Amino acid sequence: MRNHSLLAALLAGLLSAPASAQLSESASFATAIETLYQVNIDVPYTSQAGAQLAMDVYARRDVTTPQPTLVFFHGGFWVAGNKNAQIMALLPWLEMGWNVVNVGYRLGGTAPAPAALIDAFCALRAIAAEAERFHIDTQKLVVSGQSAGGHLALSVTMIPDSEGFASGCPDGTTPPVAAAINWFGVTDVQDVIQGPNLAENAARWFNGVAQPMAMAQRLSPIRYVRNDLPPILSIHGDADAVVPYAHGVELHRALAATNVRNQLLTIPGGGHGRFTAEERERIYISIQDFLMEAGL
Image 1 (cartoon, rainbow, N blue to C red):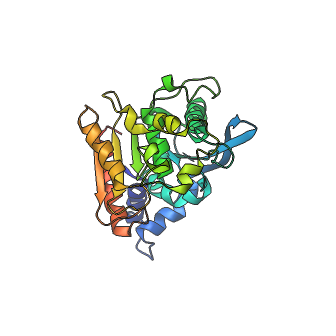
Image 2 (spheres, rainbow, N blue to C red):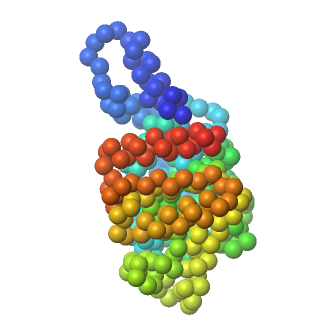
Image 3 (spheres, one colour):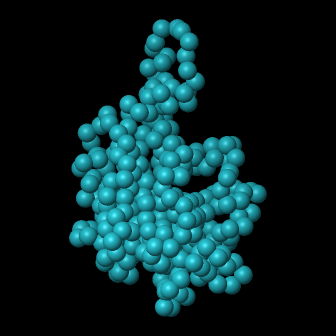
């Protein structure tokens, strides 16, 4: 994948140009990105309980064929954050030449659990419905997110339709997930709403839920480990004080007992994100290698 990025194509053009002042590799891509991508902000994808939900779609301008596409969910323990704060996290994927869909969803103050997951499933259905418009390859959808967003990415990958979380979505089918890239996501929801790893924001997602622990169990990806899952890569700092590193470890151990291609990339001393530039470079090399091995 790295050998076929948009940046590589741009550099080839630079090398053939007459000798003169030249931009750095990163600056060259930055100057070209507006030409390379059509940016579609706040594309409506569903209406839930009177709330109109939207996603941003970054679609390649220079293609007419279906393209591999990243679907990204922001973090914030399901009660904070928004898609607009995640733009920098999308840039490596744009440089790789992927389409990107950045999803907004209802937060806990508007709608408690499982609303955010319902919205995530609805977003996938809407992406499938808009695939032709945005040149999206629905057979090459990779989901990703950080923290609560990592949980949502794992959940739409692992939780089957039989659980009913997509039942409130518009008619259609949920497209298959080709791979999941989980950045320090919650894998055991019960663990963060009660007990020694209680996180107050996480618990707020369950305000008003009749049987919170039963719902938390249904929302825990670790419960749905099985042989027919797509490849899953988890990235987690072993000093994470927000979502315990054990969440990534336990998911990796459980998946290792199946036929699922999976990897846990540990960031030594890493906290809850905020990785260094060197650590991020290592992470994205690992992501690209993982996706190439998965045929993406």
